[in-house]
Amino acid sequence: MRQLKDGIFSLNGRELALLAACTLAIIVFSVASPYFGTPGNAATILRNSVELLLVGLGMTLLLAMGGIDVSVGIVMGLAAICVGRALEANTDPVLTALVGPIIGALLGLVTAAVVVLGRIPAIVGTLGLLGIYRTAIFILLGGQWLSGLPTGLTVLLGTSLLGVPIAAFVIVLAYIAVWVALRRTPFGLHLLAIGNSEEKARLSGIPVAKVRFATFIISGALAGLAATFYVASYRNVEMTIGSTLALDAIAAVVLGGTSILGGKCSLVGTVLGVLLLRILQNGLLLMGVPSLWQPVVTGGLLIGVLSVEVLSARLPMSPLGWARR
Image 1: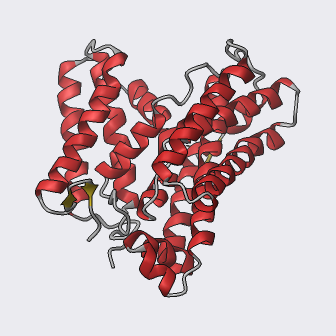
Image 2: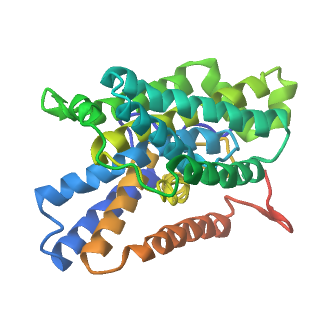
């Protein structure tokens, strides 16, 4: 059975290669642009990585299970709208911070119901939900941005503990919790077993439906948590929020070594994949490349990684696409 290959502090060959790629990209962009290597720009890259790190963690679980959710970016958008409305209603900041994860978890439950109970392939079901959720965002916003939101949530989440931003603590704790769940609990073993072979997992007595439900709900809650940090940082919600987030998350997770077929994941690889993606996007922007081309870079990386996987026979092919081993 393929499984979680890394520890929290250990690096395998793929992760070392990603670390080297991040280092090389930093050197190249620092030479190409005098603004890239500044502390302020480094803080910007890390700030822009927060939502993707959280959504990417959920996507890691989904892909490891053999699933996918292309609607996670729009889920974050819907949760962000709810957080924004809570702020406008002068809800207590602590309660407001919980709105995002709760809404995200509820939307994850809807996704699970469609995919698991409806027996619809995840890619098809979440594409359908993507269209529905996108329309819902337009209706909820009435064609206008939420802007100039109250600062209560920003103040709450903008504080630091021991000189470290709260966002960093939350992300580290989330990754540690998922690592423990994957390594030390039946949930992790069951999830990876389902990703390796759902039929064999079912025959082994694993509660496949329950694990799949839980995983979609966890992914939704993480997207909702990302929405909370997004609103706290920018104090607005735009019409196009989250439109490319799912693509970025899939690319970062696959780049990090999680198998698109399921049964194997790398949490450290996901972190490095997210950082490499954000470094490339930031560096190209500073070099004058329009942001319009960022999805091209992301899509190109995804295609390139999967092509290498196929050529190295890690993803066997059938006439209709990827075939499980």
